[in-house]
Length: 306
Image 1 (cartoon, helix red, strand yellow):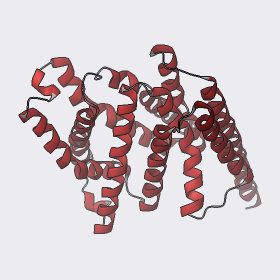
Image 2 (image 1 turned 45 degrees about the vertical axis):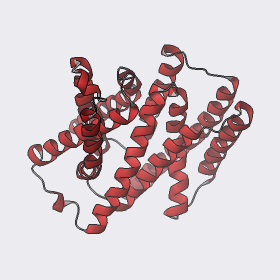
Image 3 (image 1 turned 180 degrees about the horizontal axis):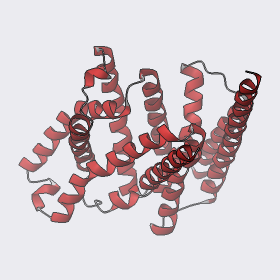
């Protein structure tokens, strides 16, 4: 029992620190605001790949063949790597162009999109609470579009790309560390070509030889990989329902940073839109808790009957 509690505590710690790190990402990317979003993205891919490759091959001493057994899986990782690149790139661009609030909205919507996609593509049946949650999100987005006069395209692309990414990874069932390493390997050649092109033309941030900028660009790989590894450790130790609640830490921190620290606009349209989505998430989260409790009771009854 003591060991189980200790493992649960470690899992909770890893989960909290991973989501806190993701929530504080705007602070990091803002320090690179003077660098183009595309160049930041390229460095993020390159140095994430280097870090993950070292971690995977030397620290874990595994080979990709243990996890990826077919050409189809490698090609699937090319697709998920493209989705990951789109998500990373748009997020960096949004942060450095004063759309932190809108990006946080995307990550609030994401869990509900994941449920919707599971229903459409995996034929998982939606229960009443999940339907209500998705309906609230739809109402919030529509209200924002008509009242604010602009479709929240950044939010929806971030939510959609990440939801499809999660759906694909669920279907592939590949070790997360191996998958991320291969995904960044697929994307690295284009990233390297672009950075070399910028350097050759004197347009790269590396040409300035500013130590702080160079360090931040290189360290972007570590900053990207570490929370993913922490998340993996958390997923091994604590229930998915607990991780489901912890995931709201990230967009909440982003929202607070956008409004309080960076002074982004939070209009009445934002209030209504976010309120609808928060209500939808509350209904969805309560349903998860009830399902977990019901499952535990059923397991306990089965054990008693044996």
